[in-house]
Amino acid sequence: MDFMFRLTDTPIDAAALRARLENDAAGACVTFEGIVRNHNDGRAVLRLEYEAYPALANREGEDIVRAARERFDIIAAVCEHRVGPLEIGGMAVWVGVSAAHRGAAFDACRSIIDEVKKRVPIWKREFYADGTVEWVGCAGCVDPAHGPAHPQAGSSERA
Amino acid sequence: MNPAAPSSAATITVEYFAVFRAQAQRTTEDLPFDGASPAAIYDALRTRYGFALDRSSVHVAINDAYAAWDAALAPGDRLVFIPPVSGG
Image 1 (cartoon, rainbow over the protein chains, first blue to last red):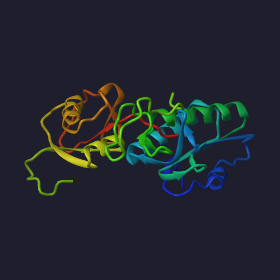
Image 2: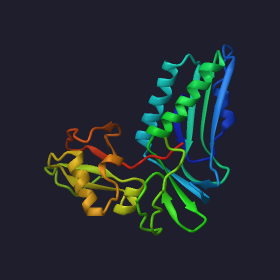
Image 3: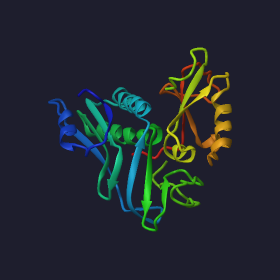
Image 4: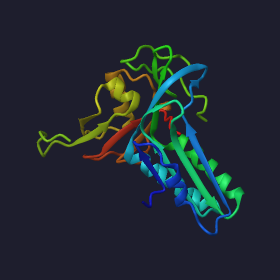
């Protein structure tokens, strides 16, 4: 289990990932949990689904974590992203970094999740309380199975 | 991907994800290889399937790596158009 990034279609085991970061030289461990929330752009969200292009997602994800290990003075880093359906409160993504000191750990963790959100080919489809369904970030796109697109569709989280 | 194709037929395989899969109503298809660029192929598929996104919102991947819109394709390549990502 030497992956730096991987997709999973089962619940993220945060404790197991955290254990991989343990190191006697680490004085700091910083983790990030991305959690499904019940709203987006002012609309009530019931649930969502993540879809990925696995070969490219794993390649980009590994590159991102590897780059963070080279760029920041850290000891270990790992990221896991969920695919498939998730309920409100579910964990969508986990990032963890251990380092001798907290500055590098915080910076690397932030950098990894920011890069994952920008580069990794994973798509979120949101199911809204009003019955509509949309691919986030795809303003103007119509999902033919689920009716007209919201003209301002898109997560406010996207940089 | 296309076992019925004669060995002399050069093709590339396009895979569809997310909104493109929903709009094309398929996960994959083989296209004849004719030297067209990813940009030209996208424009043709956009017309065929009614994709709402123009190229400024889309990225290209060839053989599981991000590539340029004018990258050279070769027979047997896997081509994927990446709509705006929303992971994390």
